[in-house]
Image (tube, rainbow, N blue to C red; front, side, top):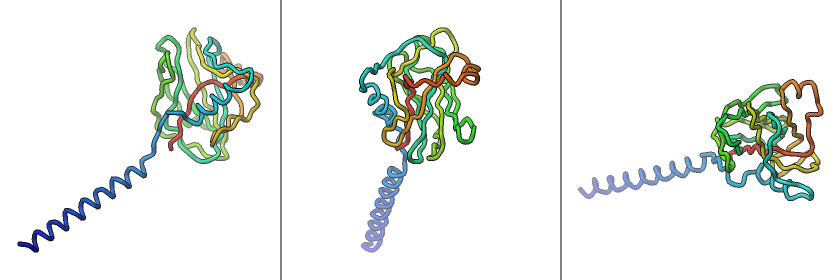
Amino acid sequence: MKLTFNYLFLFITVSTLISCNDDITIANNTQQCDPTNTTFNKLYNTSVNTPNSTDKTSYDFKYHTYTFEVLKDNFVCKIGYEGAFHKNPYLIEIFDNTTNTTVYSGSHVFSATQTSYVDIPPVPVITGHSYTIIRFIEGSSEVGRCVSSSLRFPIVYGDLKITKSSRYQREIDKIENTSADDYSFIPYIDIVFQN
């Protein structure tokens, strides 16, 4: 009887240790996607705090974009934006300029009073590639938040480098007119990396 009890005690102890160890392993391997104080947000706020810069929300162009690179491989797992005062969805795309491929495309409705975030399937972004994030809205209220200033690209913060930005009214404007590149603003389109 005592031998059976000892085996039972040993079995329960070992099972508990293995179970706890599995929980620790799972917790360590789970990637976090935290939109609190992201790398983009830090870069944006640093740009806002440069002389003659303003953080503003105004009516403007249907397309807002910025081109970026990462300094270490990662995954984009959320996108944050502050929408207009209507419920029209925004088309958000991430385009890999190096491979000429759209790596993410989705329509989302965002809060009109604060930055809100949407989960997206993890999108790999790798060093050595250039990406453009595009925000498009159809309609009459093309409201967008941006830092407006005389910026010097590239702008780097942590592992994120923004190399240029642009805004334009029609897709053909971007194709026909390279002056759509705009070095006086960065649109607030937050990309959240796994950490």
